Length: 116
Image (cartoon, rainbow, N blue to C red; front, side, top):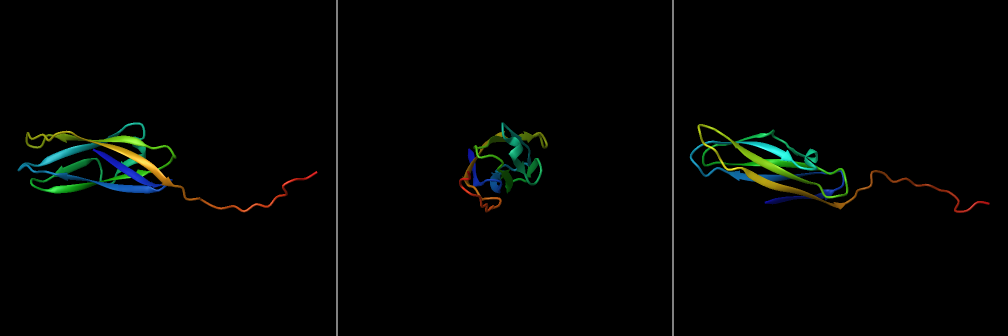
């Protein structure tokens, strides 16, 4: 699964990962961001996700662009044992794309084109 973050340079884009627990047991995941640009991505609610039985939740993943080149990272959700129950490890590919650039400021300058 790939999650794409598209936005302006230096902006923050938030995407949600939808998780469901179809079992009758509680599941707990440890979320880890890895990869070349993992520092540009963050999880707004911390690194531990708990899913009650037969429930669903959403994880907010934030990306703040710093460069024009596309950023890449991987979100790993690694199951932690709760009462002897383990879930499967989930992986999501995170990719960014800069759609436009907003100027930080506009400067007007006057100067002669040619002087002897």
